[in-house]
Image 1 (cartoon, one colour):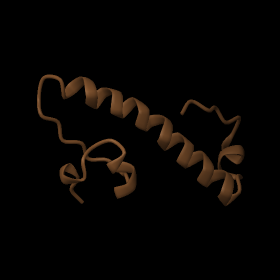
Image 2 (image 1 turned 90 degrees about the horizontal axis):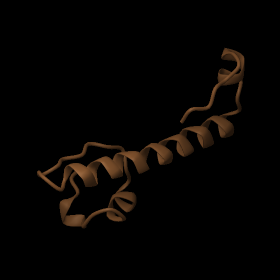
Image 3 (image 1 turned 180 degrees about the horizontal axis):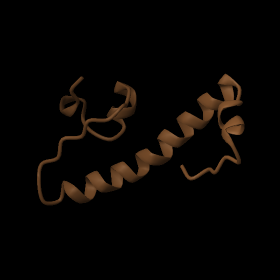
Image 4 (image 1 turned 120 degrees about the vertical axis):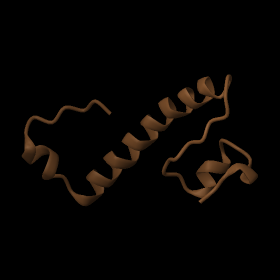
Length: 69
């Protein structure tokens, strides 16, 4: 999440595969923080989370009856 690029060329000059891997890895790293926040928040109230997950990914974290698309 905190990768520093030396200039715009380094950021925009990556191959499609490099950029795709960076995006996926960045999203996965952020998801860990989101899940920790959701667990903490859900201790005292009902929580609704709007996030970008596939059905398969969402089912890893909750029952399928609690997933809405």
